[in-house]
Image 1 (tube, rainbow, N blue to C red):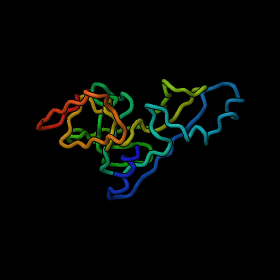
Image 2: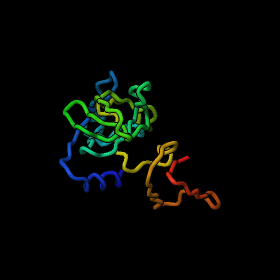
Image 3: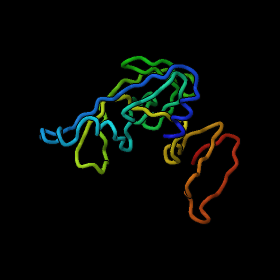
Image 4: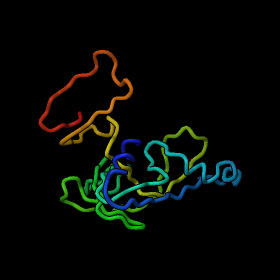
Length: 169
């Protein structure tokens, strides 16, 4: 996430910030008092976009949910933003052949270690200048940079393959 934000800073153009709407999914009014909206805004469970989504035209994003499988809009798809509007984001495929409209949708985290359920109304995307090894599997890149600040392999696990185009297996 730190790398994504740093790259976004260096991109030309105006930054647009989309704030989510977070709410507790409980019928108990005490939960509303125990977990205020400001606390919910500070959470970013796995698979959810951040409360404040900062974007610019031209930035690379990744879908976090299946939107239209028949059109190839599924979890992990990378797109390039072409237009930012208040309630819709226009993006094109990485190869530039198709344009898509991405709406805000309600998102409920499936696996969390928090003792309540909540819903976030936000665009189902996040910046994708950098991504985890798991999210990059099966995708093709012309250039990649590996950031290995922490040890990620045990002894003997790392094998390098040289390819003309880098495909993450």
